[in-house]
Image 1 (cartoon, rainbow, N blue to C red):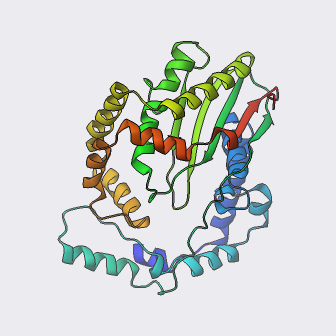
Image 2 (image 1 turned 135 degrees about the vertical axis):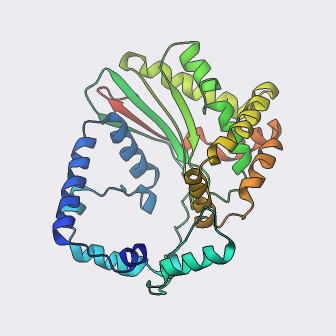
Length: 312
């Protein structure tokens, strides 16, 4: 049944119209969500003229113009065996797993692989963008293109970000939330993708605190780029990442998700075994040098969603 659904979907016109209406409703709902508005504004400005800058849910215009035959054409071009990745987790031996995988894709045409995602151009200038929104709080995001799954700085940047802003005991949380009470939460993260996914810092603050929090945020990141993490914080970050890693693969569903990432991004088959070993080897010097090479405050995109435009 799954093989037939993959190779010969019906795409019933009535179902198409229902899904089209649901997606249009979702787009309308995004207009009342400052977080959604911030994400859409950031994507389009961080990745202009690049596939990553296009909204995954489409636009009102693109959804309205879409027809069932457009979906058919997309399916015929991309739902082919050359693009298939089958991940099986369970009580199977290799021969049985291969048999199941072949059954799943046997009705698909061979086809050709989808083109690779183009490289993301480096940013050369800063950008501050304001999205008007009537609310007591301002939503602030600061971002730049970050890393791909195969980036040579992957581990120093991921471990270093754990110190900077990935947890409630991070440097950003301490400076912005604990010391000054400027935000209930603040976080930073890398989203490694096929091409350079974003490095982004996000927070919410009272509108009256926007100018101060912008200043503290930039000063904190700039100091971290210059000085890097102290040894105690780095050791705690390594221990946290390594100690928590088994919980990220402790169910078949979680393991399937990780294996899908490994297959999709063509990572080494022993990546799950390599991860804790690679994290354990990261040094403070490697973190500092990686952040100095890669994080550029002077060319970042800043998006502020709120009633008052920030100073440029």
